[in-house]
Image 1 (cartoon, rainbow, N blue to C red):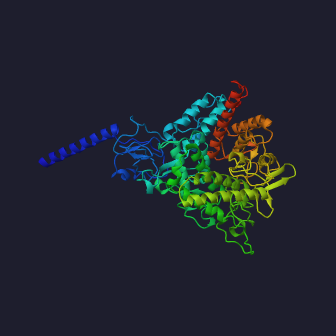
Image 2: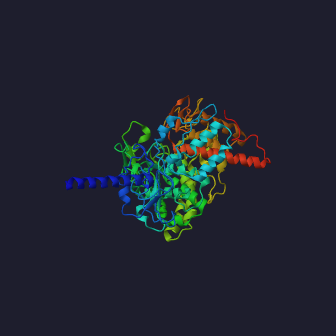
Image 3: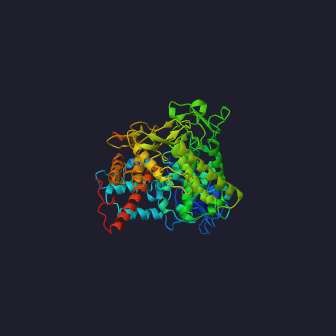
Length: 638
């Protein structure tokens, strides 16, 4: 009889232990924000195991990609003592202790962003367009920036039209709300005093990081960038993007889009085109998502690097990790592509990069067994693909070379301040490289057009052939003022320099005319498009760039900017098909034929436009002594 009683006692004790554990778990245990499996593919199964032998960890405020720090040490970049997890945070947990918040966090299901858009959440905007509110709930936003939230609230009182404000409210924070897939530290520096921050930023609906797109996406927040060591600051995110760009360039400088870093624990995204594309040299699909040689990708790395320095004056950052080596690799890769097709003796040069694709689209492969059309060396860089990811017809792509030259000059101002012989030599190389490109563009890329005078060609081959067009994607001829190519700290040594402002004004009139074969016209949207989507599909991005450049002093007919800007804003508002976000392309003749519901770059660019118009309104108000009846943001857009 004793044995059954003993079993009852043991069972009672076990039940009591379970009850005590359950009560503890509910009251002070692990709390989680759960993500649907199709939103974050990485498995959370080894999260807890990762921290079992570690001190108690505390998560920072961003639920999708928290940086974990030892709880006894203040979370700061200067003394992080950090332990980044090996996989994306599907469950936001605090291991063995409380979360960063003192109160329990309710479970929130974060649906994929495209599904969120289809829900058309209210309240709808009170204008005729009835735009939904398409921001994720605060718990589901991938990066929280208090200064951005304050700005949006301030603009609520500035932008009087409900539809215009709602489009701004949805679009400007889109990158931070939805595309910061992961943040953490480099595994090799995690125990350093200053561990290397990393940030993996997707384009939107594609789980890969384009160098150009990710740079442009965070560049939209430049007015909010300020020096900070806070790991939840915009400066930290910016450094993470620059550092990951540097790593990617060192992995494969001729590739343009990449897989998540191994520290993230995210699974690589399968690219169905991998088996059809054959670049030489080959690439590792576990590290690279797609590989098309696009010069503007390297220029974008320099663009966000110089922007960070100009806003923060943080010179030490550039000496600390791999920035100098990445710049060296970029210059080497681009320099090797300055060779023409033929050597001086007539032999075919061995190109540093070639590409063939098994495809039914002519824009997805290169002629001449991967070499592309013949090119004559002139100091510019041959680039196989445009920023649209379409193959160049002639490989001396003028806007990409302009952007590369401009940011070589700007980045050389950083390099000149760094220590070491390598930095000194690179400074000279960067400036010489940029000068050679400027000379070649000035000599070979300016074309006398019968209707517009001197204009820049979009592409040239060095032999005299030119491609007169423009494409919606940046860098473009239309967007030249956005990267300020016409101004240089190292002007060309010419007795009679060309009037760059006049050439741009002429080029702009050409681009926005039916003389440009990719200027699409229609009742829904008239703007530049491109072969990527095809005829009849203008890009709202190009309409936004048109409005932005209309305010630039080097644009022609400044007296007409009122009509031009009004037309672009109204068309962008009317081309969203009621979604309240900016798409990649739209059908010029019907509202339903658009592409990409989730395109962070274009949405951020629209936010830039609204902020630029706000600056213009404030300047006009000051100049007029306080009144501004014609303010852009104070008027109705119904």
